[in-house]
Image (cartoon, rainbow over all chains, first blue to last red; front, side, top):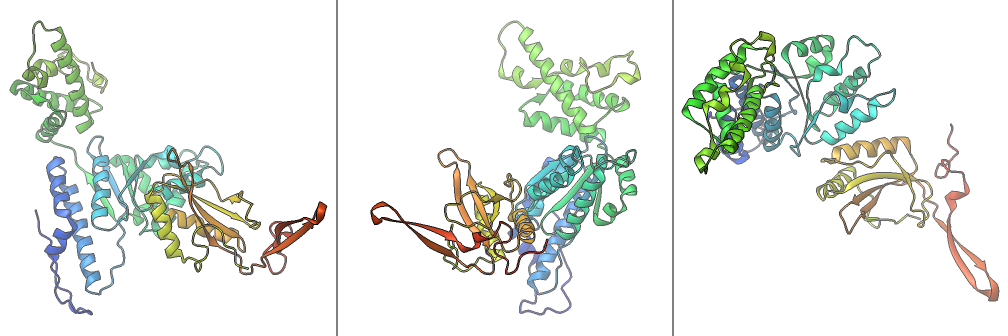
Length: 314
Length: 145
């Protein structure tokens, strides 16, 4: 747990001359939230660091306010970029909770939308639709997944532009009513921002989600299994490690999402194995995933053509 | 004559901050907010015009206030009210309704007497403002279109 420290302001205009940031920290309960974040989300060091920075900043802003300094509400619109399955949505959900506990958003709910929820089908349909979504998100966080779909450069009559304009206006004028988080794959978001410079400048925090390394992925798989009350046998863990390094070489690798799919399929195989077995099964059998459950995956096929590795393997 | 309909109507007009707190209360109860306006404020006129769709799934009053401001801008010198609808089984009705804008001049109502058979008198009321066509009722001079 890192402690938040801040310089004392040069001159305070009201009575309290010192302020105990640590007490304020304890009072807002961010500590437990950040600890939870550390505990439940594997890896993502730069993301966690940025969240800590934002949390500290909001804390200091509150302290400044108590000391009588101006604290214009900071712009907290964010862009999450990263490869598939790196935890953008999960972190966005947390973000709503964090901002709420810090008192930055009033309600702390997350409204998650994609292009379909914002852009209409015909002329005059887009503005009411976008405004409706914005109204629902007020007091919380609006999360726009795969935001680059909003802008379709190939079609100049596309209504996405209209949605973008309304969004920009609200992001600028009603900063204290809602926080917008855009998410998408790194390269596509880059082109999106290039064609919509207004967006880039209105977003203060560009957070890049790095890919997980093999060790982190294994940890994630174990957490997944643990949450679903399963256990990996030692040989299964070894098989999974091999699975990860092989899966990574194949196309459509989606980090944690691939692992989740692999886990789901392993569960199916385990169930099949148990039902086909003779005799009684015990508790251990019910909760343990064996190496054979994992090694049955097509990822382990020797003579596999490289373009076969989709997430829809058997 | 000041129109007294709905909740809070004997209190001074609510400020925006107070309105927003009432809306917050209604949203907290899970009620859907609807905004309605009219220039025919007869007490038996329950069908005011809807300002857009009722606002479902809102969590915060800011979205409602935005619509209230838009409705005020479009309907100056009209009555505007906020209804909070409870969809819970057993209620399924408006639980809270209050006026958030009224015309600057409210001429009030006339008591009309109709004499019937046997010198019986029937009473009814009529808003003076409804002498004029809809859309021109509460303006000091006819609105220029």
